[in-house]
Each structure stands twice: as C-alpha cells, then as structure tokens.
Length: 620
Image 1 (cartoon, rainbow, N blue to C red):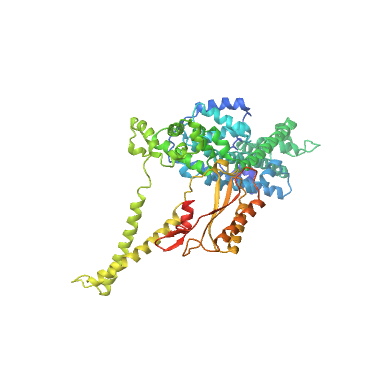
Image 2 (image 1 turned 90 degrees about the vertical axis):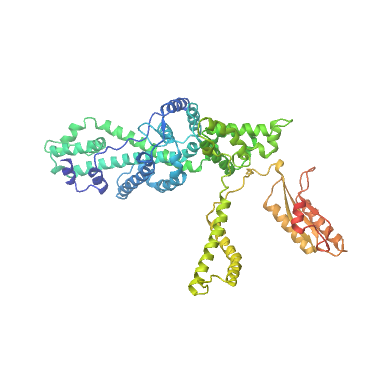
C-alpha cells in the first residue's frame, strides 16, 4: 500500500525511489558513543583486551568481509554524493555536513587505493582475527580502531591513542604487524562511519523530499494513503524527518475544509518545535562527525606513524635498549622489525621474547672491561639488533631460540631461523644457465639432423662435435646475459643497512670525501680544486673533510724536474680553499692534500704510483 502511494508522488528523485524499492533495512547508526578522557580510555583498553577473543579466522566469507565492505562503503558514498550534489544544484537547502562531504569527496575516493596498498590481502590474512560477534572474522585491530573512533567521535589524538594502546597491552600484547596495520584499519573504520553519517544525511533529505511531495499532492491523498505512507517511512527509520518537514509546511490559517494532510499532521505532530530541536541537534552532530572524519583522514597521511607506534610496541621498546637501534635509518629499522616478526612466527615465540633474546646476545657479546655501554656506543657489529636478525648473527640467535621450539615439539626443521635461506639460489642459477645452454645445443643438433648434415647411420663427425664445442662458450654467455637481464628486471633491490643522519653526520662518524687523481698540469689541478670545492658546497657537513688523493704520472725515474712545482701548486689550491672556508680553531682543516711518491714497478719497468687509482684507495 505504501509503495503504491509513493508511486503516485511523481516529483520523487531516483535516489529516493531506489531507497524505497530496496529491501527493508533501517539506516545504520553512526559509530558514536560516550566521549572518553585519558583515564576512562585506559580502563576501556584493559576491559576490551579481556573481552576480545581471537581465533584463526577462516578463508571464507568472514575473512573476506574486510575488503568488500570497503568497496560497498565507497559505492554507497558515491550514491549519497550524487544525490546531495543534485540537491545542491537545484538550490535546495544543503546542511553543513553535506557541504563537508561535497567539498572533500576527492579525498574520500583516494582512501580506497591507500587501504589496498596499506594492507594487502596476504598481510591481512596473517593478522589475528576476532572470534566473537559482532566483528567475528575481522582483524583484532579492527575492533580496537572501532572502539577508539566511537569514543572520540572520529578525532585522532595521539596522546589518547597511545594511552589506549598501552592500557590494552597491559592485558594482551599486540604484534608489530597489528600495530602497523592500525593506520589502514583506522581509514577503514572511518570510511564505515562516514558511510553511516552520509546515509543518515541523505535519508533526512529523502524524508523532507517525500514530505514536500506529499504536500504537493495533498489534494489526492486520503487519510488511509497518509497512514500507509507513514508506515513506509517508519520501516526505513525516516519518520522523524518526515513529520518535521510536514509540520513546517502546515499553513498558518487552517480550517476543516483544508486537505486531509493538514489534519493528519496536527494529530501526529503534537510537539512540532520539539521535533525541530531534535533535527537541529542531529544536524549539528552529523556536521561535527563529518568534519572530524575528514580532518582525521587527512591527518593519517601526515602523521609519522613510526613515532606513534614504536613507543607502544613492547618489542621495539626492548630493542631500543640498544643505543645503535635508535641510530638506524627508518628503512633499516623496518627490515629489522620484519625479520623479528618472521623469527617470532618460525620459533613460536612472541616478538617481545625474540627482542629480549636479541638484546641479551648483544649485551653478552659486546661486554668489555670498560662496560657494556662503552662497546655499545662504539658501534661494533655484534652490539646491533640487525647483526642477529638480518646479519651474520642469525645462527647465534637460532641457537638461543630453537631449544624452546624443540621442547614444544615444533622441531628444528620447522624453524630454520639461522639457516641460510638463499643457499638454493646458486644451484638454481647454475641449473638455469647450463640447462638453457644444453637445450639450445639440442635444438641446434636437431636442425643439423633436419638439414642432413648429420648422418643418422654414422652420427656426428669430429668436425661437427668441434663446431658444437666452439658454440658452447658464446652460447652460454648469451644465455647468462639473458638470465642476468631477467633477474635485473624482476629482482627487488635490497638496500644495505644504514644509519640515520637526517640531522647531519655526527662527530663519531666523520667521513673523508676524496678525489683520486694525477698531478699533470696547473690547469688540471685548478679544475680538481674547483670540483672539490663544489663537493663541499653541495654537502656542508661539519663532520666531513674533503681531500685530493694524488700522485704523479708514470716516469722512467723516481722524480722529474716539474714534480715539485706541481705539488706546490696543488698545496696552494688546498690552502686557498681552507682560507675561504675556515673551521674553528683547533679543528682539523676542511680540505686536505694526500700525495704519495712513485715506487718502482717490476712488471711495468717504470716508476709509478702503486696500482694507480685502485692502489691509492686501498692504501688510504
């Protein structure tokens, strides 16, 4: 009956029609609850940790809900956006919350790609899943992000967030993978909340649209029609907005001869001003929520999550007991932490236990009569976390962790923490080279058979065998060149571990930048000095020195008449540079000349610098 009445309202938009044509499903309430302060958040973090149970999470529907729901949220937001944009273009009233959505929709659409990049499906599958409803099958961090968003009204406050996570981990530790998944999970929950708020805004607009359409067709609607229409609005949870707009359209002067809609509205809206107050409060709350969501989505991309996550991670707090870990670059720390996650999975230990084992090993192997701190500060390899997680100390770490795995029945074969995972690559490479070479030779032999150059009765002659043997070397080189090109195109580059010198090179890590060269003429020396000056101008580091590393050209005797003048000219250029760019008194000069004499070379039968450029660098 309600559908028939709605069909008679010709002025309804397509969005409104589609809302009533879809199965009965009330608009979901926004993710909004009581606002918590720090102390209340800490209490909630501990109680949430006790309440959340985790399970394996199947590969079926519950595990796949995370990504389809994101797609569905964006699709719903697009429909709401189109409807609100159409309403705005028709010069109807648009609430401030709707204007937030219209002005920032480009930011919202960009979230889908960031979510897919931030949490690939393989990464998502490894996260602990919730075992209890209503979020069963979703990552545990999804429940944490949901609780945080609900009790802050979608505001990102670093202090509150860290206090919440710290309190949660007093009861149950989160893995590093879960902590790094939090930024992406927050995006997902915020999109879910934005969908709900946007749908509620669009639903209020639909309710008002239906009310206007009902007044426009008031002369054709009976009280039975109005009752049926009201039930249709109730089934979608739109009755309040509908009644509010009907009340606002009531004529000032009313009489019994007026339309049935006026009398019906008076009976169902005894407190019109109260409805208007509730509508204004809901509009203000929606405006605040959407503003918070959009602001937080922007902040998530700007926050340095390493500074936010590392302090709340138990394993990273343990690793920071090693002074060297704090001095590593961010990319190196990420490699170390990923390796720690892998070791924890293989050994059956927690990440915090692995970190504690690494620190114990570093302290034990770096112990000296001067104390652990002295050796740790000196930067010896054995005093770093990377040595045991991505370096040569993996076997030592395995020796500490494997006994526990064996006692638990997991077996050394299942852990293989310290085993070289790259050992299979050399045999595979050799097999690819020689197998491909042999395959091409076999094709060549078949071609010779087809052309009749090999007699089936007598087989290959010695000349044919020699020709094939001569083909072997160039053919293998061609095969290796092809394999090397394929490897170069497909292999991901693994950067070397490095220190973080974002604030400049510290004094204990002074560097020397050298230009190896020959002193051949005053003009060439002047050009070398100019290049050295440009290196300094491009790298103004107080803890860096710049040097010309020189020797003379080859000669038939130990010295030539012009050698002294060339050396004096080079020293003059270096002195000029030091005068132009002075250093504080007592410090080493910024520019240096390092020169060596000729020595007799028996094989060359000449006087020359030992091993020329390579020799200079090796001697340095």
